[in-house]
Length: 164
Image (cartoon, rainbow, N blue to C red):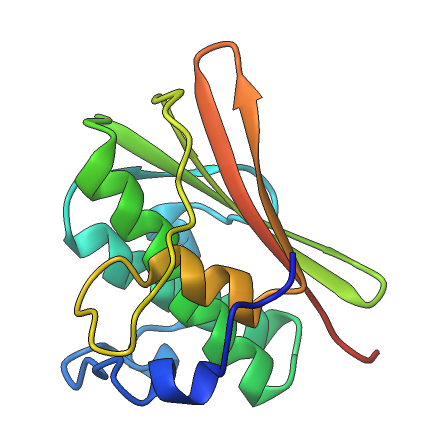
C-alpha cells in the first residue's frame, strides 16, 4: 500500500521512550525464556499498555541480535509493532494479544493477532493531528500491510523488505 505523505514530518513528532530497556539490558536468551520466541510460535502478550514496550523489546532483539538486520529497518519495525500492539490494547478489549515474527529471503513479516473482528481504519492525517497516526505510519514505513480475518479475531501484519 502506498504511503500518504512525507514520513519525516510524522516521525519527528514520535516521542522516544528514554526508559525503554536496551536489548543488552536483558540477555536475549533470558528474554525469550521469559516471553517465548516470536520467531517460533506466537507470543501471548497481556492486554496492558506495557505490552507495547515488551513488543518493542522483542522486535529489536530479534531483528538486531538474531537476524542482524540494518538499524533503520529495525527502528521502523520497532515503531510499527508498537503501533499495532497499542491499537490492539486500546481498541479490542482482548485478554491477550499475539505477536509473531517471520523471515524469508529479503523480507520480514510482523503479525499482531487479537480476538476482535473490527477492522483497523487508515484515516487521513493532518499535519497538526495528535492522534490517529498509527496506521499512517504502518502504511508509510512498511512495504505492505494488511489484515487477515480469522474465525475468532484478526491478524494485522506488516512486511518490510531488506537486502540480504
